[in-house]
Image (cartoon, rainbow, N blue to C red; front, side, top):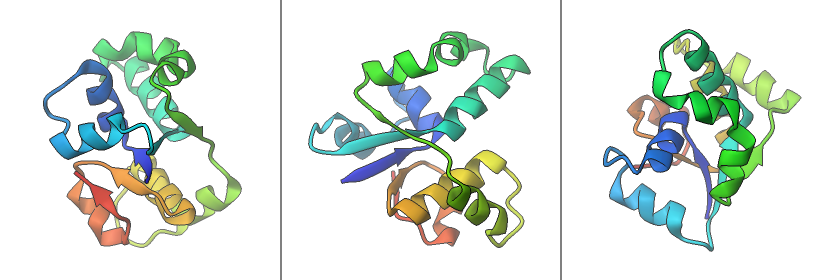
Length: 128
């Protein structure tokens, strides 16, 4: 199975946080699954650390690539197709990071690991 982690799912995985659902933990731990982290999550974490909204994620922001590689997760770059899809998504959901993750999941056919029920409106397979 190919999985795309929402930013909070990545942070909760890294922290061993119980807010990450049991099924999400099991799927991320399963070696046969491909878990991907979007460049949008690097951007989101760095931005939120910079403005003081994620003070506990300074190390992740500063060492993002190294931290993600240590988990054996893959990286998903942002393509022009992803950006176009994100910009054209219908609805009033304004969070650019969420819109990018939705677009990437749609374009790449990925299941999105997220507790965001709002994502269900966009026809992506959400795992939680």
